[in-house]
Image (cartoon, rainbow, N blue to C red; front, top):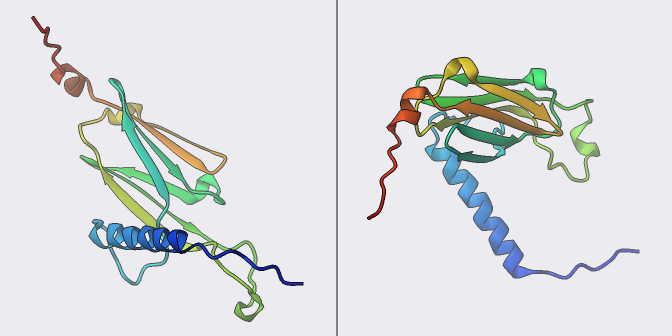
Length: 146
């Protein structure tokens, strides 16, 4: 017996806004390519006195399938997510799990020490710790208030 679900128009509008925000983010990213497959994932980027920390939720992948590259002021995360087994399209009732290539680039706010960058991937969360360069740490000046 089918169950009726309560319709929530506010949730529908918020979902539409989130989809639109993701579209705009993709359009204005450096690596926008309309023909490329899905490549979005959720990211948190924050910093403390010593490091810039980037956390990305990329579930359902092996760490070997994720690539991280670092240029002067940009860190790029890319990879390819494949289906575990091939299921014919007509057998799907619903398909929301994204597969295909993905790539996102993030501009860093300061120089980092490339030799000390570390990354870990656990429970679908990629964490990249980017230590600030000594030159950047030296730029911070404490000013006493009189």
